[in-house]
Image (cartoon, rainbow, N blue to C red; front, side, top):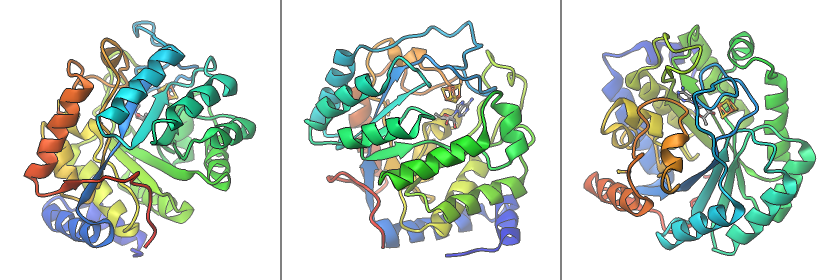
Length: 330
Ligand code: 5AD
Ligand code: SF4
Ligand code: FES
């Protein structure tokens, strides 16, 4: 449905009545995408990044970060194990690491496709021909947050990057027939409620298939160490409004929400979300892929997280999706 920007701003600001907003989003979710929660297995395969986003622990300028790159074999083996745990979507995420060029990525994609899974890529800005090659190799979906639609804020927070280029990448991805995922962070320094409302309207306008919304969490090893960060409540209100604006899309209960609250993802599932993306990265790599502090599950195994999340989803009366869980337009 459509909501005026001024009304979105009012609802974003209305802490007192947020439970009503959550209940509204929850009923829209139930009516449009049902009670199934779609699980995605997230592989964080390289913590090397050429960019310098001020908010992120993987930024090139963070000399304290311990960098790793999984081998092709490790990545494929991780995906195979995730498929055995029942995941029907594998999300391959990394910093913008040029080592994983089109040739390497396509080899990995082709191997992982053999496990009968959908593949989502989350590897940042690339050339059109690379996006095209990944798609031809079998990638189904692409995830790249716009982070904020406030151009000035974006350019302050992402030095050396261009908002227009990011936008053009999203358009190219859609044109190539990927399911398109994007999203934003909530609580960035200098971000206003008006700006968040613009973000929501932007995501609606470009017609995303998936929207990931999470709080900004200040990382002590970045230039934004002393900033305040986003709140769980405002993130949940933003997410709930996304559900109301785009009733049938996929909306994850984000990991950053659970970092702020031990039950953050379940609260999100009860306020409009229908997707969870448990980490299936193994061993030390989990801890080293540190966008923000307090990351959950760093000492847990993929199998442990799979059963933990499965139980918790059942506890709130929901079931786990058995298909690929793509965007079904209603
Ligand atoms: N807090 C919360 N989210 C972050 N991201 C990066 N750094 C942070 C942080 N400090 C998010 C960005 C990026 C996604 C992979 O992680 O939105 O797109
Ligand atoms: Fe790199 Fe992404 Fe972190 Fe920016 S947010 S520094 S592109 S990993
Ligand atoms: Fe990792 Fe619960 S999801 S321990």
